[in-house]
Length: 122
Image (cartoon, rainbow, N blue to C red; front, side, top):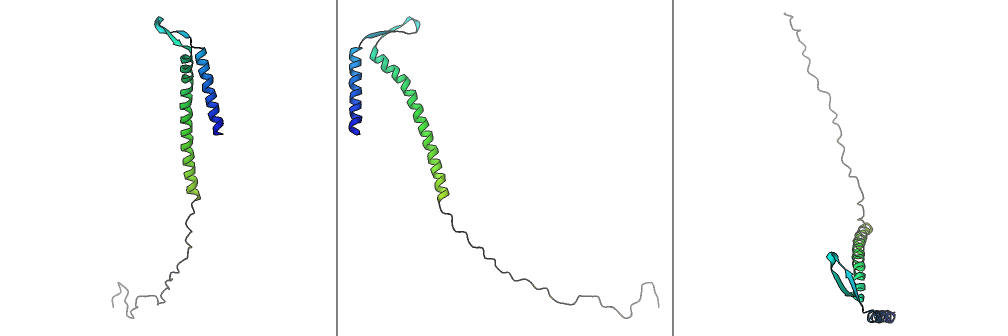
């Protein structure tokens, strides 16, 4: 496969060289302010090719970079989701001793046998 790639690029370079040699004519380009530039046709075609190719290549690299960033973010999140969670600790309720109510008799005020109601004089 590598041989075919090299053969293709050599063939393309040969065709470009033949095209350049057979079309080595000066072309007049009218610029602003009445300026006229004499440019070789192959150079003009190469410059127009670069004007179209470079922005497209930069756009493609920006898209690929953004997609690569999104992919690495998704892979990182997927790795976090796939990592085994620690085993949950079994909940063992601790038996707390229940305080038993004290069984004592209710406290009442002692009743005096010789109690005198107020206002009663004897």
